[in-house]
Image (cartoon, rainbow over all chains, first blue to last red; front, top):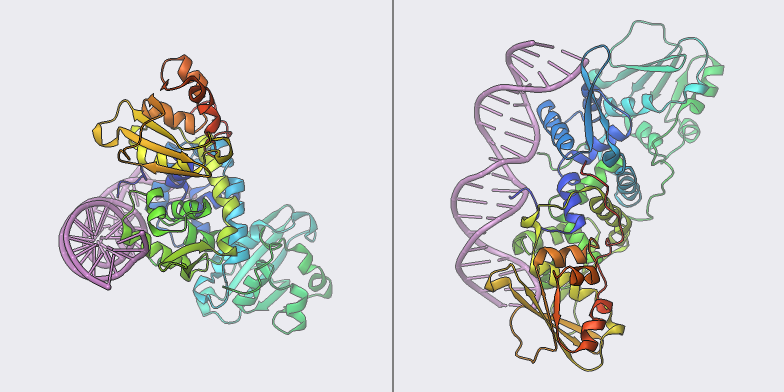
Length: 230
Length: 230
DNA sequence: CGGTATCCCCCGCGATACTG
DNA sequence: CAGTATCGCGGGGGATACCG
């Protein structure tokens, strides 16, 4: 494997950089705004840290990413103009995936850590209740370790916790992981899932009513799926 | 390597299919209209036939490609709706590659077989001279085996020959491979290369004058390159 | 937190030959 | 022409441990 394709074609030159394993997902994370190594890791949890480090280095060499020092010490990554220019490509790729790749019967693709990480990044900050609100998600079909997640909603800020932070819970969400993932991907609505009894909320009426409005779904939620899988 | 990414994200699901080694190039060839196995091979000459066969099978399983029987016996490949829907993605990828990936000092990416194959596919059929015209390309910096190529222009048809077909040559083109590749990619013009003495034509004045008009350059020729690398 | 270092497996893929 | 069969290796990358 020469690593390259030995072709002058621009598609080949681009594919040498972008179509390597994991790289499209790392780019997706960078395009979502993650800058810290460990934040990037949360977006690609099955990728080993050494491989992520190696990919970031390659992307830096290829001019898509630049590393910069943080004021408080430490370093972080951001996209260059060349990297940012890949946004429409990654978006088009994801839209194609949503439209054409079957998602049914893919239990092995469900991942509550990733889902909560994605979710917390896109909440509507301006629609959250004032003061601190604590949300607890319970994924009904998951074993203890991946069953409970907490979201701490504060003014202009959302934290996700993978362990009990100890605060009183204001609103509880109980839902199978597949249902919450389908909601995130735009394949179901919160209202519909509640009516069907697949998602239940426990807490004050005002929070139960406004919950659905806090969510901002995946950027691919609006992309329709093709009628039938080939 | 689980083969997949274990993520529900549409970018990940798409990348599992499209971002495998060689697959973007195979898709490019299919999108260009190649349907026969050996035509596809010409577009990815460094790919082994077994690997190409395997990739085509995968693409068929994933619903991007369908295999069909030819009237005269034999079989061929064509894109399904899902495969065709990847066109904007591959085009965007190539445009990004042209714009942002440096092509300089990449002698190992030059390939006269591929260049002639690409060229012959996009000639302006409606601008060719009437009757048969035989063109001979000579790549001045190449050794014997990859030095000469012939294009047979006939009514509504272009054939490329990698060996002397025996016909009288009407127009000879002599040019270094890098220069002809740069022309194909839109980085130089035929006129400019002639003026600079990097491309010379031998043949009747009328053919010399109309030559440049026959060419239809790479579909990425119009994409500008970024000012500087990175 | 922000990565490196190491080890080792395994299989992707390149090369070549061959067949209907 | 349109692929299949076989073989062997290289190194990609998964897992885990470790360091500043």
